[in-house]
Length: 176
Image (cartoon, rainbow, N blue to C red; front, side, top):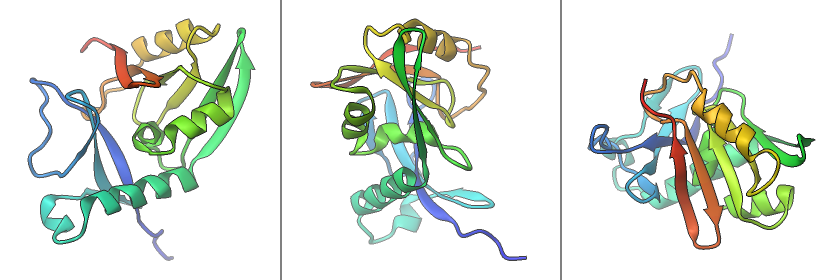
């Protein structure tokens, strides 16, 4: 039996005063002061990529490659529900929420859902759902985020607005 190859992937992490960014992990800010992307080698087991493992390689190039790996291995499904279009992203092995870190996020949303702004729900690290702002699905996405049973220590369930000016966290599930 052969082991499956590992892939370099981005990992979203929520940061706050009570949950700071681990100092051993290099990161890229996704939403300043709130959400970052780190790297992990993911296969049958996972390991975080530390400053030591990055070494002399260019972290930004590694992050770009990781995001490309994620986008290439994800599946995208657009549907119409409750008066609104929804884009669901899934990835075998999880980490679909990390699509938020991709430089192709706005293009993906515009292609699947039309021009922005868009609302993205991240109920857990493995789930990415998006809809146009003001669609019939915005309340449903917020409910999914708030009712999430996700216990991930790395990512707080969040609702993110993707606008021309950038991204911002609209709501987060309160700590349980």
